[in-house]
Image (cartoon, rainbow, N blue to C red; front, top):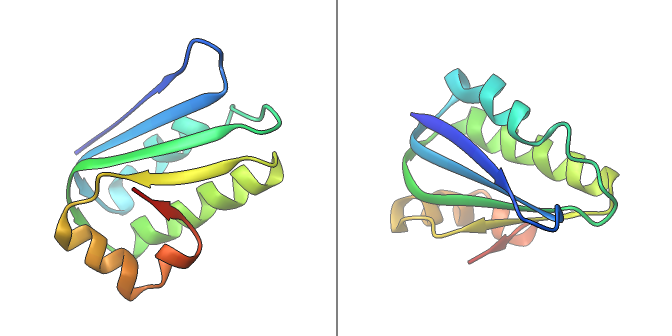
Length: 101
């Protein structure tokens, strides 16, 4: 599993890509991908297209990201989840807290 991130040229969007298993073992890398980005209005795009597995700790990490984004009046979008991951997000009502594309 790997967590990678990149920042848009204008610095307003941080894209975090999660590949493979998204579980507690990725907690530090995931947090490091966003914690220094605090620009007001910061946008966080979480690319889940390569995520094969997600557990409850991953859901907690997404909530911490949302809390971070809220603190800088930003927004989080979850992009390209597989059908299995989308089902997890919907069963846990994350579709009410996040924009899922």
